[in-house]
Length: 271
Image 1 (cartoon, helix red, strand yellow):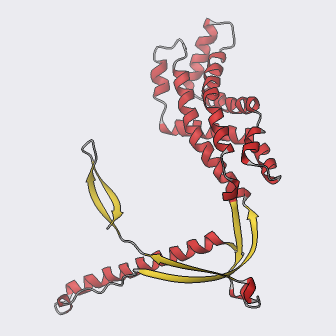
Image 2: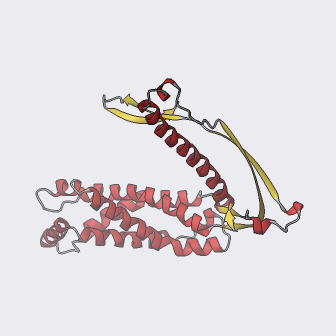
Image 3: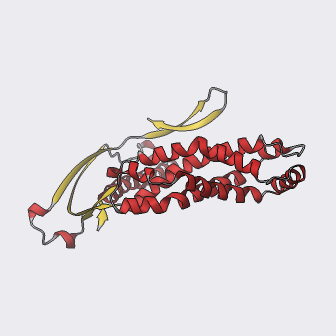
């Protein structure tokens, strides 16, 4: 059994691969023609595929719910919001009065790898806080809006906030700041960081849940089909489905263009 999308994708991939093989062969021929005084008088042959028509026959086995695809969609949403939350957290943390001379510069100077680690920690916290409720609701066939509405926002913020605090505690200059804050205040030295994290989450968690609630569950079904000769051989005609596809092959070429700031870069566009 296979998904219909996998079958169609394989056809498109094979067509592109056939075009690549033909072009690669033409490239080899062009060198032979160039090196041969007689062949040089003739044009180099090149096969063009302008249109291709396929008729696919298959039997529909089932319409299945793709929970894995749903989780992929959720992770895509969380990755996007994870970047936004990370920026908000660092902006707020940079504004903390940490008592260190170069505090803001240290926070602003956090490298790309550390940024990515923070985003990963945020996404992990979001997944930990919401996926049990989401998976259970998905299995029961609930709408995406109800799935999002069933998530405990306070508990989600606590889970994500804990992940962020542990990530911050791994930075040497943050640990130094905690010591400085503790020396100045008898209160919890983590409180300014906790407040900064909470402010960032308060501004963005509603957007996460809104986007989750807008996922179209109808797009997350897959059509399970059988397209093998053994599977179709003994089936009556009324159990078979035919799908005819006409494909057009377009050519794309590389070009050098100049951007608004004067930089030149390569771009791929239609011929």
